Image (cartoon, rainbow, N blue to C red; front, side):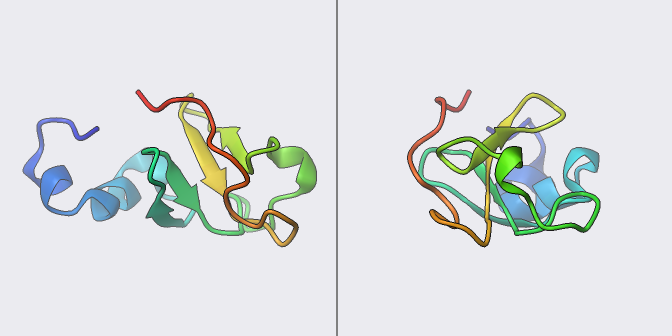
Length: 86
C-alpha cells in the first residue's frame, strides 16, 4: 500500500494524514481489510449523514479509494467488509 517512500513505511497513518488527499478528514485507523477509517466528521467539519455511506459504513472518497467512516448511527464504524483493497 505504501509508495516507495521511507516516511510511509515508518509511519503509515502519519503519511496518510500528511498526504494532501487526507488533510481534511481525520484518519482514526486502518481496518483489517486495508481500508482507511475516518472519524465522524467530513471535510466540511460536519457529521457524516446516513446518505453519505453504504451498508458497510463505507464510501468511495474523492480520490476513488474506499474508506470506512464512523457515524453516530448503527453500525457506528464497520458493518461489513467493503470492496477488496488494491
